[in-house]
Image (tube, rainbow, N blue to C red; front, side):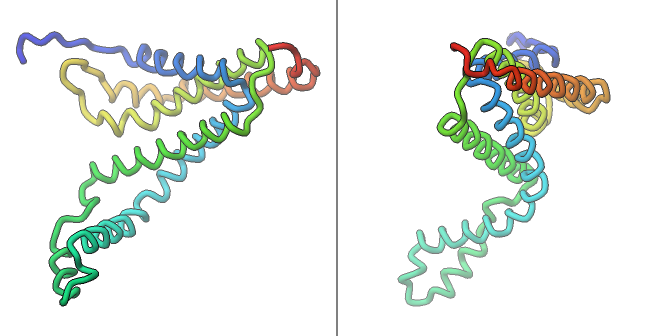
Length: 205
């Protein structure tokens, strides 16, 4: 592995790339859909942080039940013996890394449902300005997703593509970043309110 080249990715470049991708998605979808996703995304971060630990025990019990059924415990002559044997095996979620992956799964599921529901029931983009506002909110969605997922997926620097997740986390935790995020959100909301009030939201796309 000594001859393998490595690249150090600046945290701002990473954030900009992800935010840009979600911004383009937001431009195509429109501001209304993206605002809904942003609210659900922020709710998902709170929900996953608050409730993941309480889900570990039920998931582990469900995992044991699946193993019990798969091993024929339901039709065994002595189901109690089969259950004792099953309970002696490792739990489905037993390490801190397993818990982190559970967070990723729950968060990804919520966000996927949010995008699917808004695509199905949300109001589509109605004009260029609507798309531009959607782009702005989409970038915020991308930043929020990076903020939540990156420290979990890459808790340490990785080989080949070296990324300082500590610097990314420090960037997010800084007061300047939070102020900038809040300012962008307020500007988008104000612009959206003015756009809606102007009556141009039904203009040609």
